[in-house]
Image (tube, one colour):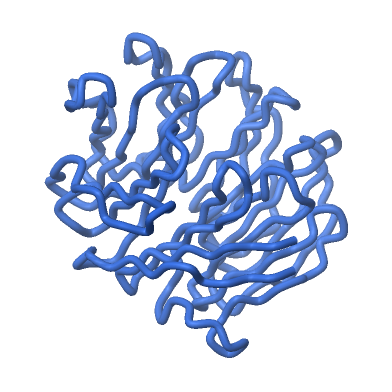
Length: 302
């Protein structure tokens, strides 16, 4: 496995918390504790523009497949909606009064899921942007969301150290997974839908069977919090990013560690916490953002 950093994009004045690939190839959006959402070109590794201003920190960005929209979840509970066709902001989605930590979509249902510090997840119709339903998931923060269309499940990682599994069709609770000793910051279903990976502030990765919900394996993955998990779109690997300033590449069929991207291993990577990672659709690039205000582009050869 060959890894090379091909770009280091600067311009943000504060830590970056959110990252999303656009529906348009080669375009990404980043945001954080800044005054706006930024658009970049990963083909030319260049700044394009500030998409729109924000009044407070952005913790989540999402571009749903099949819809010309970009959603930004704010610290004040608002969700901003940018329409690429109209090139303007649509009316803000107002429901939550506490920070938004994750936004994901359910393609076949044309629904948007928004997770908040208030312990609930709101569900919105992607076609008319109306509020459909609100799920009271936990007493405290819902930090992250992963959708598995194959299993008809959705997983919510919570501040109370649990992962809560819900039925994707009617949003009824199925199971609560316990075992982490600190808040769950990241969850990701395997592409085949056979297992779920959760990452926590306890620095552990836990692999859960999606049928029995039994713990398959516990991996002491990092030195500090696991902030982000991203499965490669075609190859049998997934990546994790941590507060310990490293990115690690794991086998998705054997859970073995295959690569460590860190300064100790000779890579000119982030000097502070890495908050989010995402693969390009073709799987050739992994983008990372962090507290050091930088966007880094990594090219892989498998």
